[in-house]
Amino acid sequence: MSAVKVILRADVAGLGKRGDVVEVSKGYARNFLEPRDLAFPATVGAERQAESMRRVRSIRDAKDREAAEEVATRLVSTTIAIAARAGEGGKLFGSVTAADVAQAVADQAGIEIDRRLLVLDEPIKDVGTHLVQARLHADVEFPITVEVTAG
Image (cartoon, rainbow, N blue to C red; front, side):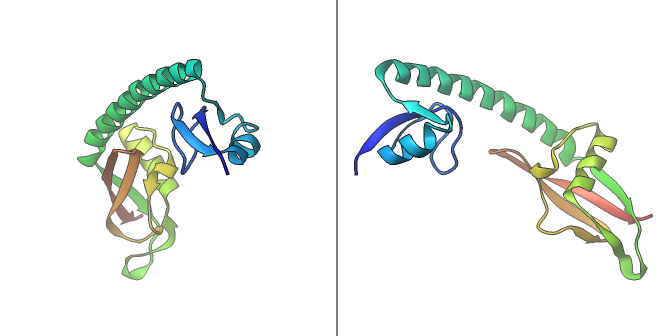
């Protein structure tokens, strides 16, 4: 089994990020990566192109991280209030999901957060204060305080 060097055009889970030069089997490159336009063969000229891809990626990554840190500093000190119907004992009739938290953050703080970036092990089913982890960037993870009240 022989290997071949390819340059990734896009992020490939478990393999690398856009612009990385990786060594994979010929079959994987020929049958999976190249037909899906995820990679191309690594030549001398192409490796220079890959270097510029990595530079652009690192600049974009730094901007994304800076924006995520700014959002984190604004939201860490803020408590997001969500009113939900509750029965006796503080149990909610439904539950508060990541989508509900994302909508509440948008309404109260004016910050749009994709619900998929909010980490809830399971939906919130009780009245009270809960911490919801937000993972806006690979290096920026912070808790959002959510106060669920009976309403």
